[in-house]
Length: 317
Image (tube, rainbow, N blue to C red; front, side, top):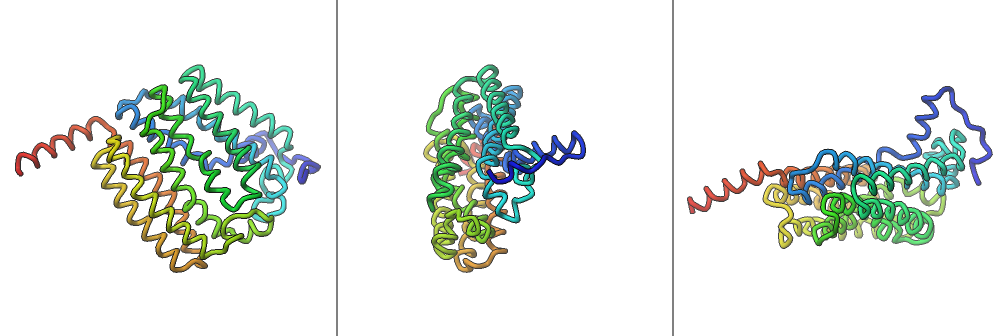
């Protein structure tokens, strides 16, 4: 395969560590972890076991790192063909594919073992299913063959909140699935905004992302539709499921209005790459702040304050 014949080039051990670290695409992982943490806080009603939190986050990190490393192995031909990704560890020859595969398998094994032994088997199986889905369904089947690749493939990135919920409760209920669906609906506007920015790269290697196949106008129309669905859907945690309260509701509405505004601006200017970049960056901020609001809203002290304020307002009425 492309890149496998190149000789590894490292000046020292730290350079080796850096190359393997880069295989895991570390910039992607924090967003996965914050959705896991938010789910755990809600499931525990704000009284989370710190040891379980750390172990679950570590297990999730190892699973995500394994999935991204496997993705690097599978997509090495694409990475070698694109100028933007040619310097990644495998296409540049700094890491051999067979060594990366061993690394990925070790990471997956550590993730499953850690979660199964110290958290519970359900969370371990869910984390492992994320790796399998990401590789077999998204990377292998959808990414290179179907224009709706990121829509269906987005389920892989929606699994972390299920892992977090299962880690706390040992089961999955409707609120866990609402969190799963929220990430699932948020993924298309998030990723298609990125696809608009790097459309030419995808076209160069024949990856059928929506902007490449259907064009910018269709893409921004789809971003608009998914954003309009995502924002009101985020409020289902407040009603009818009552998993979150007024603090989260205020944050979700405020963040959602900005999200919709940016999607509308992009819809009016489908060829404006700076606007696409702004939409992409805000989508990340939106999810991070939304999850932060979930955590804050779940805290017992916040419950006490909101209950007191509600009582006072009721008495005044």
